[in-house]
Image 1 (spheres, rainbow, N blue to C red):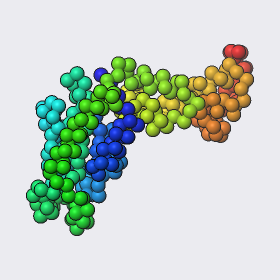
Image 2 (image 1 turned 45 degrees about the vertical axis):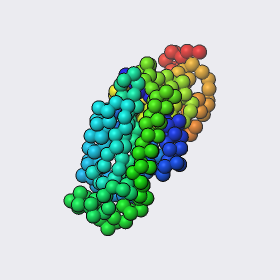
Image 3 (image 1 turned 135 degrees about the horizontal axis):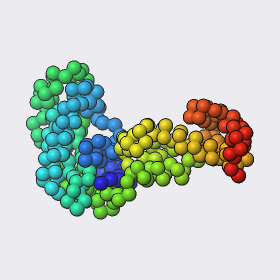
Image 4 (image 1 turned 30 degrees about the vertical axis):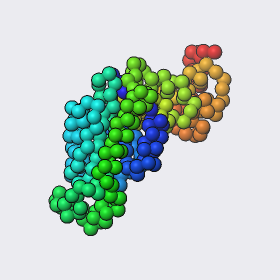
Length: 285
């Protein structure tokens, strides 16, 4: 099962949700890896906690437990208090009864709940953190009435249904590895950055890098270099294109860098490789 995320459309949806709620919202895969979020950064309060190794571990454990609870609730959203005293909510994105992702809102300071600093600080006192700075960031969070929070949660659930219906998140029949190979092979002349490939395939960067390692046994950037080198070899063997034109054709506009990449992959410079082909009589026109 290959789960595909339409990241550009998801980001627009998350931005819209934030514009009416001022609450950070994110889409996560079934393993709770963040796929997209708005805003990109955490609140100052959560950023400080997550900068601590143990704090980050607690955050992840809390989210995982909440997602498991939400899964048992089916189409309902689960509202909970995180380990640091903030209100959060998670709901599953389902396809034919199977969870294919999670939609989460969080980092909310509830106005009606007993979560003032005196109640929150004891749970964080054993972490190696600047509690004075943490307290300052805590009170920067705008308090939100519980009734309003539950209104946002109901909208969150509607968004989760829309995400599935509109195929923002979907199960793809063709494997990611096959689509990745096709995309690279047919776009070598383009700037194949990780962001570009991720957006084109509508899948997270982490999943994409993992896919490359699984299929090719090497990092994605090395896969692209190898494929560009193979394409350059064919052009050197079968055409009279100049080296600069070949460099442009395979997406490396800098001639010197092209020479460096080619030599690192083959042990020969492009001109030396072409000469060896001519001398061996194996050139194909």
